[in-house]
Length: 332
Image (cartoon, rainbow, N blue to C red):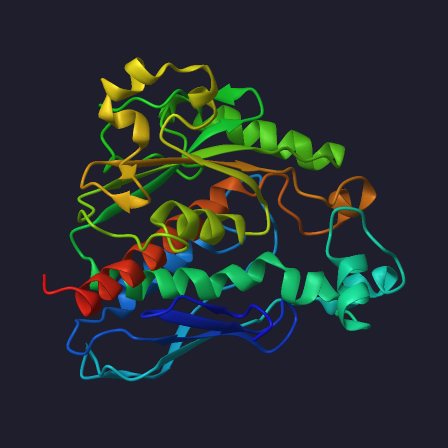
């Protein structure tokens, strides 16, 4: 299916391009009778929406969710749920000069290689606008596991760095940039605005914490929970690496040390959740658009702040999918 389908028991199919009429998603497998809140769905979309955070893209979109099917009288029907978000601020003419230009780091050349045609307007299907579908899917996944808490936070953005603290309050407000040290909010905003003025961009890191995850999620051998989480997060265009638990620190650790501290495994053992906190980290590349295109265009000098809800949504989709599979395959 050309890679537009994600999930098994709970699946999403996303569609739409950055400068097309709309971005949409069909979610299948959501159980019936779950309470739906338009306000909660919109709240999740607003966290990802452009034009709301200083130092990010100046493209402004309301990103209003329109539910087309699968909901009746505030409850899920158990049938496919279709939702669209209409694009309203495309400004496609701004991209005319890029019609015959191949931009390094984008999907311009690779799309031509694969399909023989490409939509040059805002990246087309490869645009970050596609992640709207993921956030919508993540909202419905959260209805399946309402007690599971998934939180992503910025741990590195340029020279701003925060070391993960297991005692950190994961329900706290980390501000518009998702950075746990709220005293740095204004400095981060100024830094991103400076990058934008310079036509430059920056990458960084984020960590994801999952609390109250049921034990027993994951399907050895090829559908291990760690494998599906890795695929889900690496499918986000700007993410270039994934780790869980100690991650790369495992290369320097001794067997005795990690055996004495179960948290070293990040809540996953043998590819199956063990019921403890799941801890993951991802690395983001700098936004590929730089130079005069970045100065004049509507691009994010750093994508991390708006990507955090997308990260959370992909994790929720994986966990909900595996939870439904666990229910279907076992007597629990």
